[in-house]
Image 1 (tube, one colour):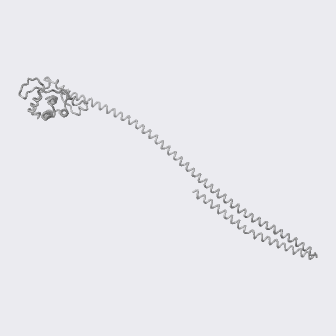
Image 2 (cartoon, rainbow, N blue to C red):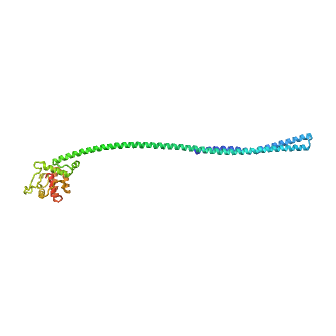
Image 3 (cartoon, helix red, strand yellow):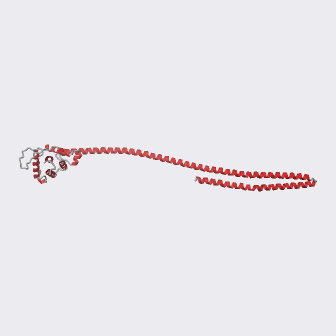
Length: 333
């Protein structure tokens, strides 16, 4: 935009210069004609004066010498006039040439000034645009910083709230877990005191291992009844006065589908005179698996199945006679 403006200014200056230069050149071409006419006029006037003097001299009867002097004087006047005309002609030509030079100088100066003014205006416009963009960039950066500060403050507040919320939730969960654990523990201890084996989930919630539960259940059963919670039955037909409690198990009704009598008799015979286990921690892996299954079984039919499982494991050699005795005693058999 500014270049187009400058170009228009220069074009206007050039047009004015060319018009003025054409006028001066036209005047210069007229100068020789103008002064040539002046020369001719001076010569004519000189001839007229000379002829008039001759007529005057003839009328007065002046001699030839006088006429010659007059002609010489008249010629001198003519030469003086012609010289003066030539001088004026030269001055006019010189003045015209000077005007042309001054016009060219003025044109060049005006062109340089117009170019400089255009450049200045363009530079000023560019500077103003730079300042505008710089201010806009600073404002954008300031707004971005304010936004970042707000987001940081919001995130900090949100994080603090989240931490407080998480802490309260954790406190609530801890309190709930403690209540559940206390309830499960009380329930498990109540069941074990009654000679009932709690299920695995209850034991896990109460923080009681299966081995500890078996020991507590066995201890409760050993002190729970007037006859120690166990009745002696000699199912093999032999002498029952041996005094070994390991060969005495509580019989369960066959109507419940429990351990077969022949299997119990075999188990009792095998247990006679064997080392007795007193704590669940002494059980091997296979016996412990059966103990875990026992922790999930409390009905009479299920206990009968467990008893059969113990007998089968004993016959296959997976558990020892002492382990079988401990497991059978733990379920009251």
